[in-house]
Image (cartoon, rainbow, N blue to C red; front, top):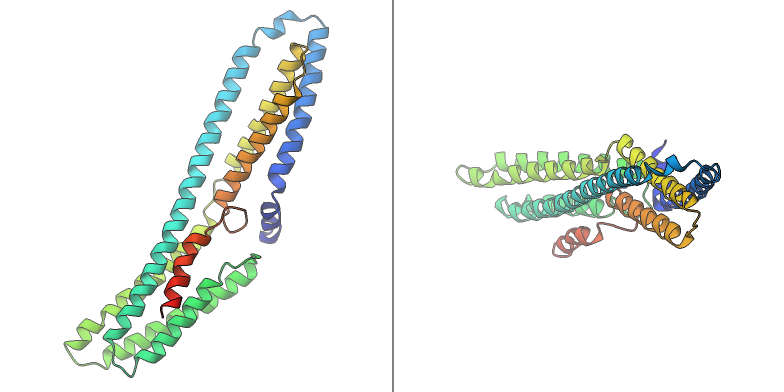
Length: 264
C-alpha cells in the first residue's frame, strides 16, 4: 500500500468505519448460527459458551490495553522529541553570539530559513513526497550552517575559538534531534498486531451474536454499543499512532517552534 493511500484511509477513518460495519455484520452472523444451534436442540453447545466468552473477551481486553498503551507511549515520545528539537534550535540561535560579529548575520538568516522550513514540514494536507523534499532542503541547510560555523570558528584566535566551538556541538545536537524526530514518524506497531486486534474484535462480535442466538434473545442496543465503543477505541489507537493524519495531533508541541521563530 502506498503512503498516499495509507494517509487517505487514516485521515478519513475508514478502518474504524469498516470495523463498525463488519462487527454489526458479525453479530448478525453469530445470531443466526446460535439460533440454528438452539433450534437443533443441541443443549451441549451451551456448556462451553461461558468459558469461551471469558477467554476471548479477556484476550481482547489484554490486546486492546497493550496496543493503546504502546500507541500512547509512542505519541508521548514524538511530542518530547519535538520539544527537544525546539530546544536545540534555540540553543544554536543563542550560541551564534559567540562568533565574530561579521559572521553572525549569515548564520542567523540560515537558521531562520531552517526553522521556517521545519514549521511547515508537516503542514496539512500531509504529502509524503513533499515532506521528503523538505527534508532534503533541511539537510542542505544543515550542511551550510555547519560549514559556515566551522569556518567562522577557525578564523578566530585562541582562546576565543575554543569558546566559539560550542556552536558546532549545538548544531550537531540540533541535527541529531531533527533526524530523531523525523524517524519517529515511521515508528508504528507491527501490522500483525493491528491485524490480530482487528480479527479479535470481529471474533468478539461474532461470539456476542452467537450467545444471543443461543439464548434466543436479540439485544441490538448492547450489540451496537459494543461495536461503536470498539470502533472508537480503534480510531483513537490509530490517531495516536499517526498523529499527523488523524484528529489527534501534535499542534501544541509544534507551537514551541513557532514561539522560537517569533523571538528571532
